[in-house]
Image 1 (tube, rainbow, N blue to C red):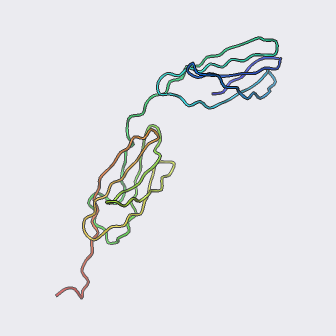
Image 2: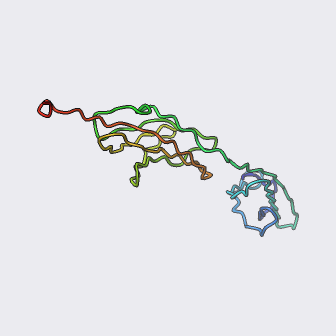
Image 3: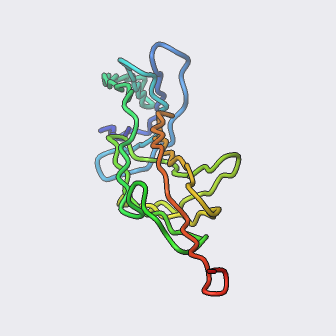
Length: 171
């Protein structure tokens, strides 16, 4: 929240949120008076912020702002670009790649295989990548994406680690 107080006299200011107690504001002198800014932790739903300024003559001014914070109940989407579902690979270490998207931004992506967790690198554009270790045969794994509100999407996948027999093993 940011604003300005227009006065030619020294002033102080306080703010209150949703009818709660007041908090003193730090004022920065400007040509027209003072500027202020502060961060407010908004509750879900309607919020009311009231700023009251008083100059050294006792003159008081009040400004009210109504701010609404909506609830994000949708989990992020996950798109896997590699490996394809059920894809067979020849190396035990595989780089899983994909993208995530969410209205409120994705905070974390990780992959689980059984009890093992593999953290993913998450880029600002929503793309992610993580190395996972596979065992010979079919591997079930799950990609998890969690947004800032705590909504989680879990996408189950499978990947086959293919190990062909060596020429010596053939009879």
